[in-house]
Structure formats: C-alpha cells, structure tokens
Length: 337
Ligand SMILES: CC(C)(COP(=O)(O)OP(=O)(O)OC[C@H]1O[C@@H](n2cnc3c(N)ncnc32)[C@H](O)[C@@H]1OP(=O)(O)O)[C@@H](O)C(=O)NCCC(=O)NCCS
Image (spheres, rainbow, N blue to C red):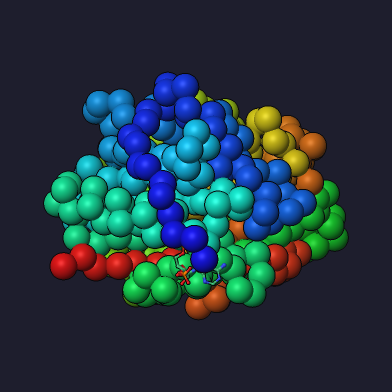
C-alpha cells in the first residue's frame, strides 16, 4: 500500500478547483451506490456559500487533498453557531481512484486539527451504507470513532399504492377528529412560523439519537426562514404538511426534492408534539404530503427516509405506507483530547 503524499489546501466554493472537489463526492457516491444519481455540484456550491457567509447559524470550511494536480479527496467541516458549541460535523470523501493510500487519514487529521482550533471537542459524522462492508464504516472504526446510532433507509416507490394510502388516511382521519391538515411549499405560513420553530427544536431532542453527543438545538422563526431560503438556494423544493388544532401547528412533515433530479424525494423531519401523540397525526401528515407530491411533482419515482429501528411508531407509519428497506445510515462520533 502506497502512503499518501497528498497536499491539503483550503478552498472556497468560488475556487477554480471547487468543481473538481464536487467531482470527488460524485465519483465517490457513484462507486458506493451505483444506479443512484449523485448529489449535484450546485448543491455543494450553494451549501458552501451558506457556510462561508457571515451571519448564518452554521460556519464551515473546506479542504481539498491534492495528489499532483488531481483533487483526490474532499473535506467539509461544519460548525454549529447557535447551539452545540463543542461539536463539529465532518463530511469526508476520497475519490475511488485514490482510496487506501492514506488520503482519508490525512483529511481526517486535518479535520481534528481544525475542530480543535475552533474549540470543538466532539466530532460527528454520518456514513451511508448501501450494503455490508461499506468503506466508511471500516474507516471510522479504524480511526477510533464510535457508532452511536444506526438508521435503516426505507424507500417508497411511486406512484404510491392507492388502496394502502387511502386505508392509512381513513384510519388517521378516524383517530384525529378536531385536527385539520394543511400543506405548503417552501415557506411556512407566517402565522405558524413560531410553532414550526418549536417543532424543529423538538426534533433535536425527541427523534431517537442513540448515544450521539448532540445537544438541543435552538430554533426560532428567523432560523426557519434561513433554513427555507437555504433549500431554495440549493435548488431544492420542500413540500410540507402539518396538523393544526386551535390555530396551533402541532405536527409536521417535510419532503425535499432536488429540482434537477426530481426522480427522488428525500424525507426531511417528521414530528408530532408529545402532548398530541396517539391521534395518528404522523400518518395524517405523511399521507397529505404524498398527495401533494403526486399532484405537483408526479415525476418523483421514489421517496427515501431514514429511521432508527427503535422509532417504532415512525417505522410503523412508513411500513403501512409501503416503504421497504434499502440500506443503512450510521451516525458516528469521536471525542477529542
Ligand atoms: C471512507 C473513505 C473516506 C476512506 O478513504 P481512504 O483514503 O481510502 O482511507 P485511508 O487510505 O486513509 O484509510 C485509513 C484506514 O481506514 C481503513 N479503511 C479505509 N477503507 C477501507 C476499506 N475499504 N476496507 C477496509 N478498511 C478500510 C483502513 O484501516 C485504512 O488503513 P490501512 O489502509 O492502513 O489499512 C473513502 O472510502 C470514502 O470516501 N468513502 C465514501 C464516503 C465516506 O464514507 N466517508 C466517511 C464518512 S464522513
């Protein structure tokens, strides 16, 4: 095995080498998940701009590993600013042509150095695992990380089975008298913004996090607007459904679609406030957003969602709707010092 002689350079989203940096992610995703369209470069560029712009809720920095003139590896480090002050999120990929030569190890050492320089003591990272033996899992284990949470990816093929969807809706309606459901696209209605922020904050504590060292996030209406604008800037549209009682939004679900790649929708958050559970509101909002998706974006062929297996109520809703297992996502952490 040859060891890496990669040079590490900082680069921003407007750097001439940034397209090659984005190309590392695309090549990496193609190698690990053939048959699935990789995340578009424009998404990395827009996210990169958000992370380096002042005033946002997250900072970020990018490094490229160069082997000769080739960008062989990519690192993005994200630093939350409004909460989780000791945490840094690591995203790291190595081009398949340059793997097993220490490029990943070099970028990892750089991530540790940068995190420490920003006063961060805990690193977290996600590893996509389409099948057994994913390189990311081997890499994270070899470098001393701990797997804190495993989620199953489930996919629903569209168009959804009408009989199933109607049965889920009928059951949900029967159990949710007094609540009404509404949908929106890209922008939460102004009068529900504060409630939407509370729901997002609860996502950070109520969705199963396993042993992940994450603290409660701080959300307000302004941060929801930043989040929404961020999706639009990244070329995505977000379809949402919510349940309302006495004028308060008490449940929501989001589906994100990359407009250039409309064949697949990604499930964002879904949450029912604790005090409103037991009324099938999760099923109600998920069915509603699938109806709106079919009406507005019929070109979407698949919805992907990730859940911890311990999240029995959410998994049950997804299975009732017809979602089937399609791989895993694991969440890892490393404590510094
Ligand atoms: C994971 C990844 C970054 C590794 O990059 P790399 O440059 O090949 O990693 P390195 O050569 O520095 O490997 C470091 C150690 O990790 C382990 N490792 C890495 N890939 C491995 C694999 N395919 N099988 C077994 N062990 C592996 C080994 O212990 C290796 O040390 P060794 O080569 O001395 O045995 C790369 O495979 C990748 O981009 N995967 C997809 C994205 C991803 O999962 N990123 C990690 C989560 S943020």
